[in-house]
Image (cartoon, rainbow, N blue to C red):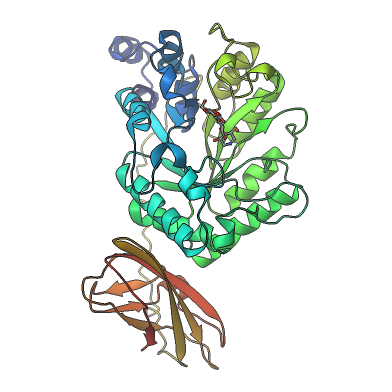
Length: 469
Ligand code: G2I
């Protein structure tokens, strides 16, 4: 990716000079062997996107596999190695050996990493499968915190929560031990992930969410809209896009991508594979992503057909022998054509620099808005998820019989407990009595209405109470 990015930047610089001879003389300095336009990763990078693949750690010793991986892809997703059973096989004992092999390989090749996945009803270790209630909630939050902290700064995007909605027409959450800890388990996981790795994009990831008319798609859409409206930290939605005869690609896929994007999140195609790998369908998927500016990356779920979890369906871009399939050619051609930021095919017309001064904007003559004084009173309640050595607290602030234009609340922590991070509120202090005040977007609370904020801390919180001030 470094090379592709460097080349893209160089191409842009050359385009600005408009000097073909200079381009020819500089071409010898372009690093690497793969040129933009001839590999999936480089071509996607030309469009400001990544092209990734799922990687299995035990295949990194297969030279034919890594040759294709290193040549074609600029993002990787560990296929199984970051799942809960792999990273926390015994409660409180974390193992990152295989995940590290993939992360280190990716970093040595300049590839970005999608983390998959922090909270999921499947591939739970035995100890977690047997848990329920607040003990499970705390264990889940601790897992999210520990794994995201360990990889802090190394993960471009995390699938924080995977596959939490039911199939079929209900539009309901999937029943699971995690769901039975309370409907807020998903937002609690996102908050813990944000606190642990503030630089990573945080995604919700699911399958059968490709068809815009499906109840499951609508249910995920409504959750994301709700999260955005309440300030729950979510940055992206992953559409797995495992297409087959039972769950085929549909032409409203582009509507699905653009509708999610319109909520203010990135959209990523996270586990693409298509039964029998029809070239036209692969092309359509790529064209759909390129048509949506916030569709910023595509990941296929394996490299060769023999690497696929559905190898009998031959759904990938390379044969088991490592040859490029027709679908590969279609994907590459689609990446190189069209899209939201097509590269210039001819030298662009040179625009002379402006000779007149740009118009100056007069300063505003109206005084800045004054913040109205607080009105009304409020009450606040706190719920705490505690694990050994740390906790997450969620606070609900409810307006009384008058609306609020601003609010403030104080919470007194026991000695030894300290706040490390807060969301949806400004904070002053981190131990003893800590004061939280509204941020811009949640200052207005209608009479009887409630807003939520939260914070994470170290130590033992005990039973906390909040006072409106
Ligand atoms: O099921 C396809 C994917 C659906 N979305 C979430 C993904 O995480 C999921 O990936 C698959 C992996 O591709 C499989 O490789 O998840 C499966 C498990 O849910 C993975 O299968 C497991 C087998 O169940 C294990 O028996 C096996 O030891 O793969 C393991 C490693 O090969």
